[in-house]
Image (tube, rainbow, N blue to C red; front, side):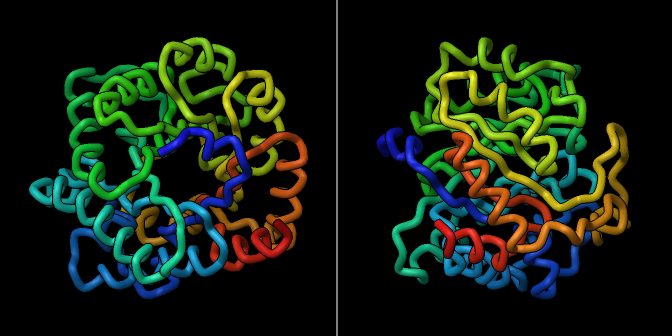
Amino acid sequence: MNTNYFSKIKILDGGMGQQLLSKGLKSKGSLWSATALVEKKYHQLVVDAHLDFINSGSDVIVTNNFSARRVRMIQNDVEEHFNYANKKAGELAIIARNKSNKNILIAGSIPTRGITYQPHIHYDENEIYDEFFQTAKELNPFVDFFYLDAICSIKETITALNSIKDFKKPVLIGLHFRKNLLLPSGESVQEISSAIKNYDCAGLMSSCVSPEIYIGVSSNLKKQNLPFGFAINAFIDIPDKFELDEKFSAQPNSYLGLRKDITPIKFSDFAINSFNNGAKFLKGCCNIMPKHISALSKLI
């Protein structure tokens, strides 16, 4: 695909996990939304959730494999389904696109490894490289580009970029930022921009952050040369350190809280203001539902 595609405003989807829960998903342990990939009885829910976002006006949907990570597969004694789950995420996204009869694109999720929102700077680089590569290999036949999702350090970013470069597809980098406007590793937008300058990246996004954090980091995103944007969540707070447990997996809102002030109107107003300040990628994350995307799509 032509990377000029990313030079114009794009509406991406919202939070698949919460949408699946609302449609009846019962998550298993810390598998979270990946339960819907491992268990065949939930496959139609994934297709339907993608269609909800497509029909709400999303130009791009992201495959539902954010939680299909080896560490979570091991925790739940289903490691043998790692390849299957990631491949199934691509297959179900294709089914949804075909059913919609709409010219949307599919982004292959290459999610952060280990515990979500944590630095991930001390790891076996070869092991993580192989996991990134295998995820991309399973998704590759079904996706138009790759989306590095909630990446938490420069080291993790470079490992991911190196692992997927041979697939020769555009890469959109989603970086998670904390309230101090730095990556969990303590690194800045300027440092990440410098580190990736020799890679062919399509854009940078702040991934799974509050609107306030995006506003804080957007001025630095604007200074770098790539198109940029956001994937905002509606959590009350993401602490710097926490551990996954079954309570979190069953309903993250019970752990991180749900902001009721981010209504569809508030979300669309925020997105339009961000677009007016240079954002090209407008995406929802956790608790941003089809009704939010619909409100934005109507304004656009």
